[in-house]
Length: 364
Image 1 (cartoon, rainbow, N blue to C red):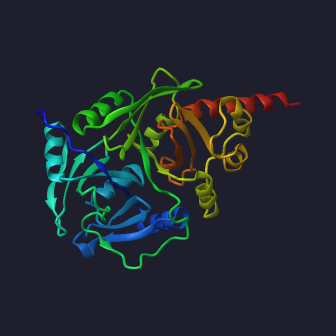
Image 2: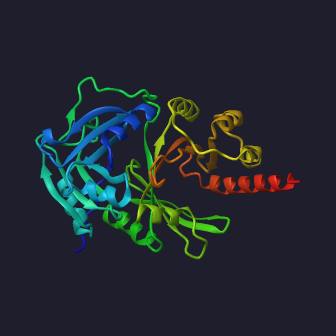
Image 3: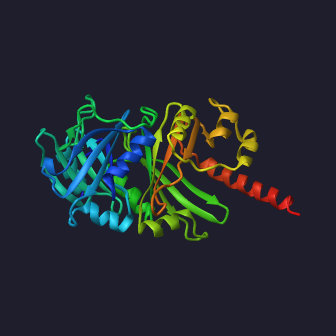
């Protein structure tokens, strides 16, 4: 069945993680990343099979859900993948209409429209593999409320992390199996009305991958879709697919207004970031001159910098604390740039090779 109607616009309502231990996962995000508890849902809200917390920081809402019964979807998700992103929830002025339109365009329905006690409606469609998209009524002219069925937590406890350091979700990166990039892009563009904003083939030594970025017309939902190049040697995408047991979200990127201040704060609260070879900064000035932060600041904090025709971006990645090492976070600051740091991939590879060559030259 096809439809000639225009797909409704979407914003980002929240990102939902299915987790093994709700208290432990929430504590990690609060004490290290500065999120606070904004609401809770579970048996008291008529959902005896699960317990959930809504965490907030600036314009970002994360939902953590732990299964309390074997038949809850979070139980099957965690057993297969470990903790991870199970739902990228989309806000829309009319969730029921958006659901009907998406199904007419080929989306697989997971949950029919349901009206909640607060008068809002939700409905759910399947996205990539085990990632769902819950559609949530939301008037964009008003502040984002908690997801339906959540009760606000009075005097919400805050973690010890840096409150307000992370502004919003910049993008989610999704690893796909080989051959699935084109049909996945087709799903988001044809069914949900997203637009392709970036396409690239990335070669890293003997490894390679293909990537396309899709974005909602509002610009508030961005998905980086990546598949391995089977003509090259297996690499990090292949490892993710094996350890995660299929496609899924590899990382969530959080936007920062000042990455030097944000990373300094997060490091002070115990967040561990991936180290960058010193040669990267020795070779940096041959590539570009940082527009906002100094090379000394970037080197001290292992922050990467790249640029495109619109400006520069600064980014770095956390060391994964996931039991399978399949999920991590990114912190990114955009100074006009609209791309995703692809130049850093090549620069990092060259820096690693330079350090290896230097080490070989100093061997007795």
